[in-house]
Length: 257
Ligand code: MG
Image (cartoon, rainbow, N blue to C red; front, side, top):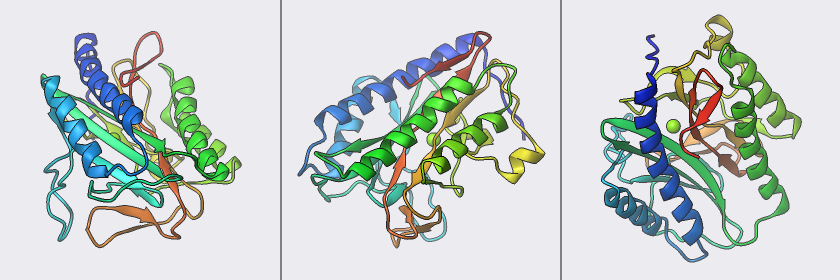
């Protein structure tokens, strides 16, 4: 495992990519409405990304096993879907939640973020799931400081989520990011056995995509027949929030906010 720390000028480039991701997610959040297809949201993300001269990163990512390359520009995961949902002609409806993950490359540097959007009026407990997931990411932003260790942050995130009566997905974790979308280290949202053995020191120049996935019921997940979509094992809803963060001398900089 080799963590590549980024220099200040490289962090500026990552910020530029991150701002395109932010802008696209802002736009999707503005337009999403009952009756809209996830394919339409995908097309809008691609259009805006290209207008900014950036490359959408998710399309063509090789699949595991029999799954072909990922066909979308965004991941669009609806309700009980956790991550890696494929954009389609499916329409979002009043009361749905839709997790949208999006990544771009600009000038050789990557940005990656995700948000769970609520469509119309959602059930109060589903809204709480979305809010708790988002707040667990806020906790990471508040606690990640130069000189600290990721294990302390991860444990605080998971303790908060579990204290709210929800569960943390453990099969999927965050990641380092830079010239590649996925770099070392792996960044769990809970205190994993690997993290106990080998912690991640929060050094200035560390750039990580932190992405808590929180389930209302069981933390267990399954892969749907399309080979890509990850859904909760019990069919209960799941939420996902992600930011790309840089540790600097002064603290934490959120590159996708
Ligand atoms: Mg990511």
